[in-house]
Image (cartoon, rainbow, N blue to C red; front, side, top):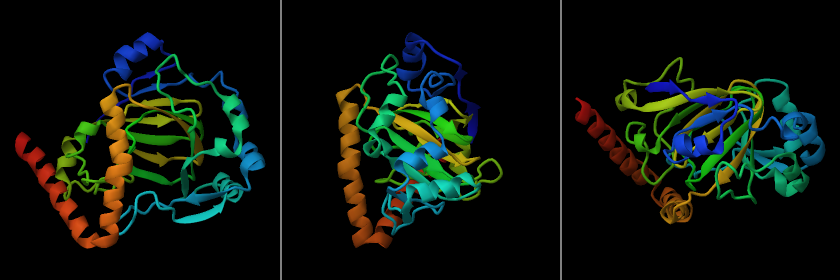
Length: 291
């Protein structure tokens, strides 16, 4: 992998953000965007336990999906407060994602400001909370709705690995899915280049997010995240400005995903092997082009 650090600013003007990051589709970290939000000081484990602790949530472990695993199927369920009590104690390889905590506690909307000056199209009914114990992993994927994301870290540190959507063949992307075949867990210490040699060609970015850091992740970006410490973050989603971008997201969300789920239920082995064959053919083509 050929990785560079993500551009980072304490603050950035709307004009510079649009010109250098939003329009070109390039990630950037804005360190102080959230520092004036009440949430920057207010949001912590005890606060969430007090106001939403009784709600049941799905939790996810570090095991990658396989031929028989539907996308986004929870590995278990527990009370949000009980989960947070375990997370805050230290390493826990369980995480929560796409939790719309604001449906249960609408007052939280008052704790932050939508950064409309940076971009339009925010889906304001669906800000989402992401929580993970130290050591938990969000495996490499892209968001199926193809939205732009502003991802703000509120507790703990998290390692983020990003690639443009165009790098998908080098990442061994499985067609009809938002996932890759390789396991990028602990990629800094080890990665299986022997079986996935095209990944050496992939050009991407990496960063460490800390309390208050906001990552702009353009639509379609592949991302892999590892929780260095137990922590939580909020994602604000914005639809693409073009109609083709919106239609692409709708197709993937309601067409592509449903077809993939159906095939996994009916002919899982054949479907997995078919996608695997297509995946390696695309990766080998990349190797041939540079060879």
